[in-house]
Image (tube, rainbow, N blue to C red; front, side):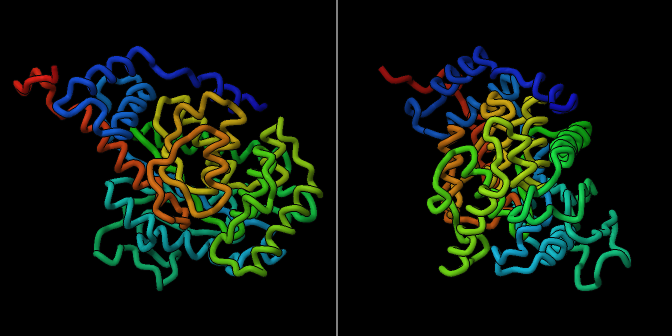
Length: 374
């Protein structure tokens, strides 16, 4: 393991159990029946343990939406052409995508990152000739952009993993290190909680392959329809994933080998972000299936990173529930979502902020002069 990854992993510590016990005592003394706010109470206590703060403040909220292309699209695993990846990046930057709407709703910044889009993405802080005319620098509501762009491109998409490794081991390491750098760059600006998101045509195929390797579940039972495959398309996708695993034989005891052989640059980048956030005691709200695959990589690099993860929701993609069960995460929501981008992460951040506000702003029986239960 390279020095940057090793250093980051070594900085991941256990949760602060003493503060968590104190948080539980306060929750038990708030003006409500014991445990009546259920998962919100669990979430508030967890965030106290993650941050090491008795009264956490989740002011600076950031969604990281990483984009990359996948060579395996040559095998017909998606109905959408790979050009959609770059087109959606411009949509993110112009503020018109679902992630932009939900990020504005919860007051989060969106950091869009080119990890390996198969074309040159040109984006600047203000609209100019670099951005196609059809993309407006303002959201439909007239609100200015609340996002920024980073270029961390490893290559022009991964190779076709049905014919060999998706990337070299060196590229896999670079993608994780890039994710660490992304988090560290934003940390200097102030980050209290993050959400993970992604964009990449064909990336549910990579996520399915990663899930099959680590969980040892049958490909047939964890592969979903992605962006809307019909029955014939789904069967082709399943057969391609089986071929991918046979051709590459990834080693489940070596997470970087798994990422290199059957992963994606955005998945590696998200794994790096998760590890770096855990090392900085920042809660990480995991989005859907592809973000879950990145969480699998991070978890198998360093199991303690799991303590810093919050599962926002359970995706419609069948493999996502398998991932969550494997890591040991319980999703906050189940809304039949399967978009990605970090949309579920936004909703999870919203609940996280609500849970902390309950802990820090609600009156106790004593302070409110309310009689406690006998």
